[in-house]
Length: 254
Length: 343
Image (tube, rainbow over all chains, first blue to last red):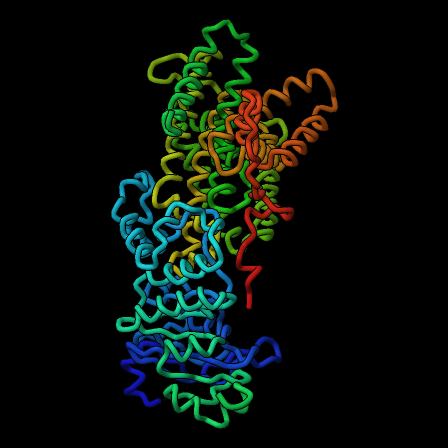
């Protein structure tokens, strides 16, 4: 990818490498994501997909390379500083606030960028509009009835939906989804897929996913990681037809 | 009766009893113990803000408490600062500054690491109080602290001082209850539950822990000030690690993450340690057994136990809600998702 394209990219990785001791997990990974793009990252287990996400989100330091977010170098920025610049992510293992209610979970996401998060001597009930926003978000996925349930008491499928809803509540400029349908029954997985497709038009997203049905349904570009290297990058149809990719990842014809 | 109404009634009844007790012919000795209860309830609540709401098990709470107490003693004996408001301010500021320094060191780690560092910090402050004789009076401590006049009232007698401590307790619990119900309080709970997700949402987790530590230090300092006036003496025992542990026991006994539960925790520890020590030299062992029983059978603390017993007395079989202990075996408040998840 050339410099001009990197300039207006939503996300740009420059020769990102990550080593854990002598183990090289990512090797010279470079790609850019344009605004509005929906990109899937696929690859066998251990390809380095989750590590790559953790590096983009700032949860892990990288060994070499640069991460640019919306044209600014964020390589040295903390996870929360990147989030404030418009990056949101979900986790492969559900990472919610288990003993808080669904509404409280969402309000935490909604108030993250607002000054009220430092309001100490004002009861939360004074900020009714936050709760209303949270209810509106829940209504989008038909979970209004669960508003006051403690997250711990939710079903797994519901938790996965809230996991994504929390990231959407951040109104991200770039959304990283780490296996959003992991462990879901097909019916619940399709709920999640529908949810993501509804966000299509406005959202730039990068998606790690093992379920090819979900991948082909949601994304329009695919990057294939194999042993920490990008081995293919292009439109979904081209990658599907790529013999090399079929060989190393799909283990045969799709 | 709505839950809210029931709470208001309970608080009003509690307040009425607390106000009337000294007028009902309760012996002075018990008024003293109740005064101590209010003081320790304040410091226990301050620790609960960290343990129960922020997920930080701080073993240096006694050092913060003791800084408030020593500020009174040193201020009075060296600088002749004795009026109520300036001393309270001095004590709170000393404890907040100490907490701010502690935070810089201890908040570099979390979980067990945080616990170990806070133990070390408490020992350092204790060592200073014990050995820096020219400032702290060493093991002999500092005597000659005189209770102040408050709003023109002479509160040097036990009854008057009881009301001062009760008033400070009421102000503290109201402020803390408002705090944990504020948007900031919700952020603290988020930090307690899942710091990793908080970072992903854009919260500076370190900063919130740091603020919570300083706020907690302020209340601990206030309790320390009251404690110094109560004893009219300050010694290194006030900021020993034992004292830290005892405050933590009050938090756990009362009910982690409740604030009002700490009143019961403080009450039980203050009264038992005084009453039992009159009966047997092995009172600490008895206290240990009681502590053990509560943790085993009422991990939610006394505030969970009381309504359950009440319901049983009225012949209602209550379903025992499975209660996840807030404090795990390693003493870490809630299992950090971080450790479980690293991929």
